Length: 335
Image 1 (spheres, rainbow, N blue to C red):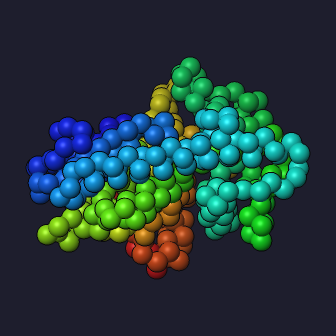
Image 2: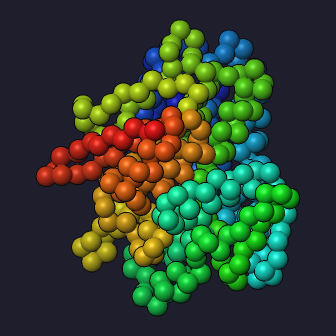
């Protein structure tokens, strides 16, 4: 995946062209911006801040990245000492566990989306995710036996939450939580909030491809975003401020087994990598919403996503798919 490329670190940038991912790019033509990047949550996070004071921007970026690292210690399934990993381990006890404000908020939002999508968004597929990581590394499909076992250790109905005391419980022993479809969007939201509190509201945050925009840069209506990243002139341009955009899909990212293309994205109902060759870009009020809706919608597909987005105010969905060697676009506007 291609991440943001800047002309330099912690310096003003003019005529800036930077890629948010293989699916999105933003054009920021005005001078006077300050750019920063750091490795966070297993990927590259980048910031663009519009402010006269370069030192203030530098310190603000430092605090924003520190916030991302704090959240990584809560939400990362790669870190065995993280809060979510420890919560997964508690599944063997069958007891309630007190959860931090951040983890509870993410799980509560994800659990609600799991209900709305009948499990197409599922944070309990940790075993399946690990199985497919190994498959991609070995370039060999998981065996039916291993898929069946991993599927048996998943199920969004196994995650129970208790809002009164911000507690949670996992009712299936050995289940593993995976927040890969929601955590980065939430982290970008928190980074934006931190920058705003520090007096740096004119900012753009790229959390490994999940984009959260703050106030518009000076003299602009917003941050200009082009949906797609593919050389296709008919794809729309958007101007966003205080909104988020996230993309999920396999139109350019896939692995081939036995002549068939499989996505790195998993259908929770079958345990298999998606084969739809589709991309979905979602615009929503927050990164938490955009990230999770993109993850859910790509599994649901175009037609089943219509009912999902019809109840989501302030959202838009752009499905890209191949048809007769052409890139086609279907747009769905939220309710």
